[in-house]
Length: 414
Ligand SMILES: *Cc1c(COP(=O)(O)O)cnc(C)c1O
Image (cartoon, rainbow, N blue to C red; front, side, top):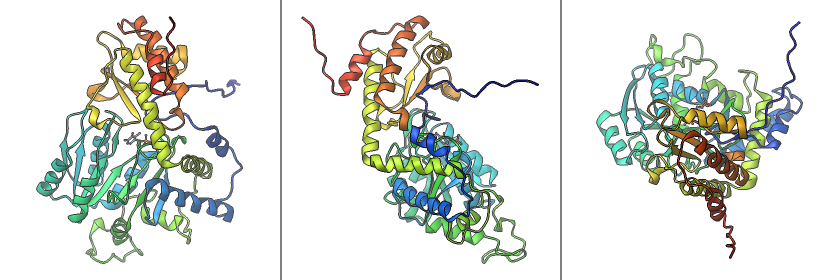
C-alpha cells in the first residue's frame, strides 16, 4: 500500500492579497468538536455571527450571514437572485474582478453593459452616474477594492445616485471588508459581498453577505411559493419567475438563517466557528483601530520599497491600503524572484493577471499577515534577493526607513 506522509505544511509568511495567514485563535476555533446544525448551542452561534457581521458591514440590515463557498459564491448568490433574464445590468470595470461580475451577470441572462477604466485607476463617480443615465440599468454591480490593480473605488456618490433612481447597487467588498471602511448603510449599498480569506484572516470557504429590504423585496417577488403558483407580477409561463439555483437561492438561505431555520444545506459548522472567531477578533481590536493598523503597516512597507528605489504601480490617490503593487524592475524575472522569496525565506508575494502579468508584484498587508515583523522581513528579503536577479536597487536603507515609519529613530554613530 502506498504510504502518504504526515500532513506538515511549512510555516509561511503570506504577503499576498489572499489567502493570508490565519490568527492562531481562528485555527483553534476550526478544530473544536462538531455541533449539529439545529443544536440550540449552534444556532446561538449563528445568531451571534449575524450580529457581528452587521457591525463589520456597518449596517442595520436584517440580513447579514455567510454563504457557504468561496467569495464568488456570495457574488453569484446575490446576482443570481436579483437578475432576471433580459435585465439591463451595468458593470463598471477597472480590473480583473470587474470582468468576473460581468461574466456572472451574463450567465444570469442579463443584458450586460460595461464601461471600462484604464487599469491602475478608478472611476470618477460622475462618469459612472452618466453611464447609468445613458444606459438605464436596473442593477449596477461594482468592485470596491480591485485586488488585481490594487485600487479602491469611492462608492458614496454612486450609492446615492442609484438610490435616487431606484436602481440596485451590488458591491464586491471581498478584499476590503475588515481592512478598509465599508459603509453599507452610509453609502447606500443595497447588497455587499465580503470574503473571509483576505482582511478577515479566516480560511477561504465562506462568503459573508448583507442586503437590505429593497433587495429582499426583489428576491421574494421571484420566490416560487408552490409548484404551479406564480408570484404576483409574473405571467403563468414567465420563466424569470424563479431563481435558477437551489444552493445559492437567497430566499431559501434567509429562511435557514431566520428563527424558522427551514432546512436547506448542512451548515459548514467548523467554518462557522472560524468565521465567528475572526469577526470576534476584528471587533475586539475595534474596526477603526484595525483600519489604522492596516494604514500603518502599508506606510512602513511603502516607505521601505521606495527607499530601495522601487517604483509603485498605479494612481496613488486611489491606492488600496491593503495591497501594494510594485513595478518589476526592467530585466528582472518577476517569477524567479517570487520563487526565491518562497524557497529561501518562506515568504509569498503575488503576481498579477492579464496585462499586468510579469509587470507588477502585489504585496498584501491583510488581517493577521499585516504586522510589523512580516513587513520588515519582506523588505529585508526583497533587498537581499533583488540584486541576485539583476535589479540595481539601493541597499541598506529599506528596513531602517520602514522602522522610521514605525516611529523608531535611528541613532547615528559618530
Ligand atoms: C479574492 C477576490 C474575489 C474572489 O474570491 P474567491 O474567494 O476566490 O472566490 C473576488 N473579488 C475580489 C475583489 C477579490 O479580491
